[in-house]
Image (cartoon, rainbow, N blue to C red; front, side, top):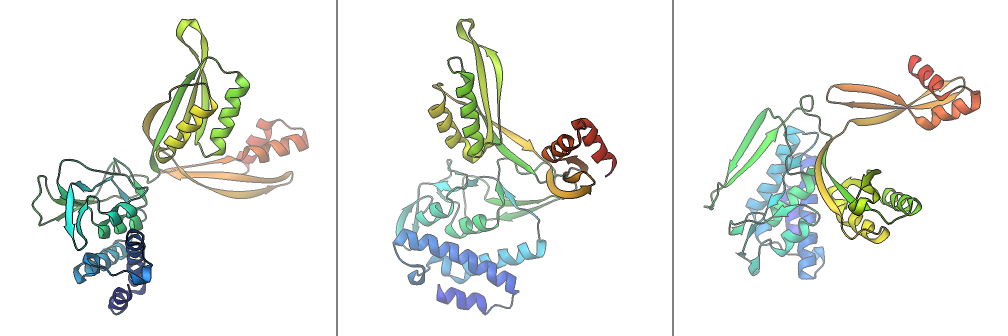
Length: 312
């Protein structure tokens, strides 16, 4: 690690590029240390320590600095399949260090034999990518293509798409919706399960009245959550409800960004929630602040709400 630090620190690049390159190598060192049961200081880089790998990492950092994207989105990573020969011998794909670096990142393996994602590539993806989603782009302005020299069963191409935020808002995400049908739980027990789901981070929880088998009135319990939360939410549903099965649906969700401001009124302070994105701007007074003023002054909620909007 010390030799890599010396090489990167001697390069005539910006301090930001040096810092990012060293942080990426730190990710690599930590993964290799975990695989070999050593400390980071004792790690000796083989393939990733060679000058071409240093060029890959530093060059990527320079390009990211030049482009200065607000956000980087990537599709799940194709890691390849089978085995790969490296300095440590023959290893399964993904290699142990690669697998550690991809922890929590969606990846897949199909028919192409060989290593398609190296530890260096995995470290770059972990460091720079803000979000992984199956369909990251809707519209784009420019496309960049990189062609690999290795002969594969499929095209050996890496593509980068550039999109402007004014055309495609960046607050889109993949979410899961979990559903279960209940006909033998009390309303109190259903309500308790809803509270638990919200406490552990569900985006939304709601119920609908349904008709079930044998003409039984029942309840459809629906939970919206981030895709990576789905397994934990399903386990909670199976534990705290009477259902024996949970259905999962995946959706793309589009959201507006928001921020808060405050405005002083004679009757008290009101927080305002501003929403922006997709060329849309709107504002809404916070419920609790409006309710507090209504209770304090004896006015109706709607009267206070309208007065706040009129004074904006």
